[in-house]
Every structure is written in structure tokens, then in C-alpha cells.
Length: 50
Image 1 (cartoon, helix red, strand yellow):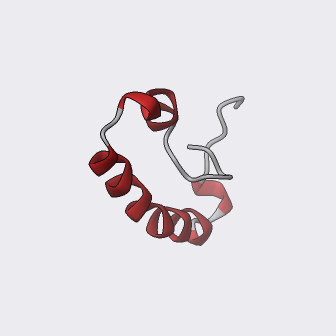
Image 2 (cartoon, helix red, strand yellow):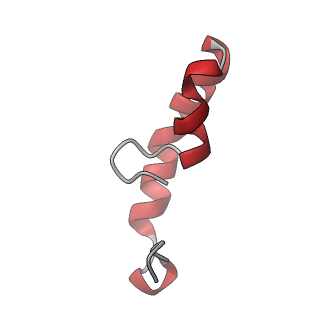
């Protein structure tokens, strides 16, 4: 997940081929995704490089 735009890497990669409706659905989920991530404890977060 990108912690700048809060989209999943698969969403970013396929963004141009998604319909406007699907894009809007994803965008609507982003505030909750961000809040959930920020509420996580540090030990619950896994980085790709670790």
C-alpha cells in the first residue's frame, strides 16, 4: 500500500484500465484505509524490505 495515496499497489498499477465507477469506489475507501493504517501499532506494520 502506498502511504501517500493509500491505494494498493495493484490498484495503482491497473488504475488506467479501471472504469470510472471502480476508481470512485476505491477513492471512497481511502479515508478509512488511512485511518486504519494510522491506528495500527508499529509492531503490526510490516515493511516490504523486512
